[in-house]
Image (cartoon, rainbow, N blue to C red; front, side):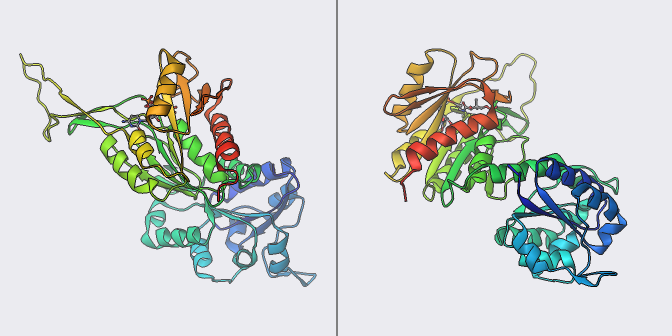
Amino acid sequence: MLKGKNIIVGITGGIAAYKTASLVRLFVKAGASVQVIMTPNAREFITPVTLSTLSGKPVISEFFTANTGQWNSHVDLGLWADAMVIAPATASTIAKMAHGVADNMLVTTYLSAKAPVFVAPAMDLDMFKHPTTTHNLELLRSYGNHIIEPAAGELASHLIGKGRMEEPEKIFEVLNRFFEQGQDLAGKKIMITAGPTYEKIDPVRFIGNFSSGKMGFALAEECAARGAEVTLIAGPVALKTSSPAINRIDVMSAQEMHDAAIKEFEKSDVAILCAAVADYAVENAVDHKIKREKDEIPVIRLKKNPDIARAIGEMKRPDQVTIGFALETDNEIENAIGKCQRKNLDFIVLNSLQNKNAGFQVDTNVITIITSDGKKMEYPCKPKTEVAKDIINVLAKDYLKGMA
Ligand code: PMT
């Protein structure tokens, strides 16, 4: 998707600068034209010769090129670019970008850029956690920049935590996806539930299920990549989101997920209910750890949880679309149709636990989409990211086209 695209790669003075050489190489290999702009401090971490060799263009660092006296026009560069990526972005550059300080070629070009800007922060744990940095990143987000969240792990300081620049392959993939999709969901607000819910027995134990959140998170990334504003209501999962267009709300229990979903659905155009919600909560949950008694086996009494999909189906306005999932082990089609009708869904995505490449935990899924008017569409086994595309294609083509 990046073939023929003009990409400015901005490099600032952080140890992760060495990784940006691989990013430049990935862009060039994909057929993009790359112009590297380095801050003066970045040149201390990686040599411009490496980057000009990989990009096939002299690196720009200053407003004027020494010897020739040639002026490097930040305005022309800003107009030339289809995308600008700043990786690594130090706390200092982020602060300058957030407050319009144009004291070097990179930040000046950023202020002139008309193209989407992607920022991959990299810094020490405490610098990243500092309220100033958090605030500056929020400002950059609010200006429409795409923040590629840093990963957690061992940092150059040997501290362990969040602050490591995301890997070049991931940054490349974010841009690839951005250009791959048209923005056919621009202006739409989409609410997605994902992952399991945990129902507390006592402070150390819960009833849960095997959902990893992978399917729901893939849907969220897909919708965001196509221009939607996404609210992702996530049960307890170990996944991260990468798109800045995803507003994530973390919840624990079915009741918490229900409350968040009801509140968000009011302002949503679409709800996708992908979470594996516990049907029952523990009625006799206690707030102290249940001790092991020698002769007594504790009894857990259950009570019904709210059915989120059903509640949303009852609230649904004619201008809203709702999509559910059905996870079945037998009588699959019949059960899925029943759920689609009872929960007033526009369509339901059936995945079967009969297939070991489908459902919980795995990276793939095998789905059948069943619409409220009885149409069935079967799909082969695909990665969940591709399955998400298939589902969203149906939503965009058959349900949102022509909707204001
Ligand atoms: O998270 P992964 O590991 O990637 O796995 C993905 C998945 C298997 C969890 C996902 O693809 C899936 O099938 N999710 C729905 C699982 C489920 O709970 O199905 P169900 O048939 O019990 O529920 C039917 C529908 O009602 C679902 O849309 C569910 O979100 C919704 N529901 C169910 C119960 C409840 N109390 N509230 C609900 O909203």
